[in-house]
Image (cartoon, rainbow, N blue to C red):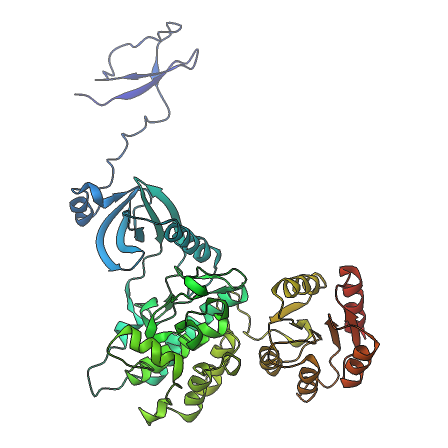
Length: 475
């Protein structure tokens, strides 16, 4: 069979195709009857045959249950309470992905809500140490999340050393620091993870760590799911903070995640969890009532400065811990003698610049959110603090151009906090605006005598609040 060629009418420009073309023959235009000539442009080639998928994908396609939407489930990577994680094949984009499929039998509304929240929470993050979410949906009754496939293993697997063999300290610190930087972004957005552990940290072949499994994550301002009496256990017992082990979900915050980071590093360095026990219930009991051991009692070559960081992170009292994951990562930098790491997602140093910061201290979540919004509208970076300890810790990280605080705080009065702040370098003349429900001339006089520069009684007018704050900033 001869080659098909394209012929063009020189009169009406109609294009025709001739099969078994004979150069000696005359071909007439069916439109106007003129003699056709060879087209200047060669006819289009036949479309290429579709690319065959990898052999293992073809094998997986033999089972109907291995198909979820446009994704083929090829290799089971892990199982959890919420479902399974598969190495999958995207049939549209022809690439390997990780597919988390929710178990499709007896799915409760709470489980489904948590699964959806995981997808939305992770998708909202934009950080090099958080695996990007590609897709989320439901097919044939099965809900799924599709994300970047991390070719490697968990940090727990990487540091699982034989008995008598010690892990490399700098490598363990570097791994946890990367996870801390990822968690710091979540904390900065008001999200807590609630299940930090080495098994939820993936490391790829280049050594990059990815913080995984946001299945239990939730906004700090949104109450968690509670059981009878407001008590529910959520997380992994070996790495849970005391308040989480007690099931006090209303007390679980960023400092609870910090405890889990410290517990994770303790495990990687010593090969032992903080409170070993034969069962989960006994482990929870110990976490509720006992003080975490010092790392150097189990491994003498751990630097004292690093031991202090771990001890502070795993302190029983929340107020004694680092206020958030970013502060914990900064402390790891100092303890290991490494230069302060920059957040790879922005290229910025983890500590905000002094002139752009404002500390906002109030234990009422709604009031705190309002003040933070007003401060940000003035062009400042508002650092939200729910208590005096967190505010003091943030102040030690660097200067601020304004402090807004309440008089009644859960751990100390606002007057005591002013005195503590005035004693810190760089805060001798930092303007302080006290906004409190404890009004009256006597309280105002006492606040101004203690060191406040302005005094306002709640409720406040947003316009007046911004005017007073701007006046202090300019001053």
